[in-house]
Image (cartoon, rainbow, N blue to C red; front, top):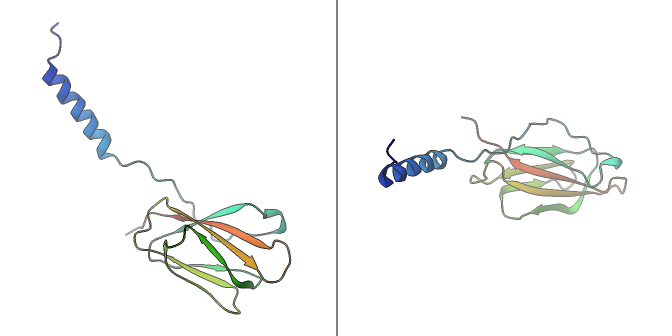
Length: 130
């Protein structure tokens, strides 16, 4: 049996590298959850919320949010967000370039003084469906 030529080995290496490069890395799955319960026991736990670019997501609480009580980390990844002055809702809209698997931490503080004092969520980018 003849040994393979250097050119054949190079072609094989290039082809196998191209096949690997053509497959994008897998994006973490984001399981949609229509309801998340926040209780006094859940302090320190952060729930994941699936979000899509340019689509609003609403959080509805049974306690009023404190004034200026919403923090995003990192900042600047949302196209818009709104907290009602007296409402129990928070609306967030990720930017159009928000990527599948991208994560933004959201922390809200409640105004009523009851436990828990705050809640934390992860906005997880979900692949848009056409």
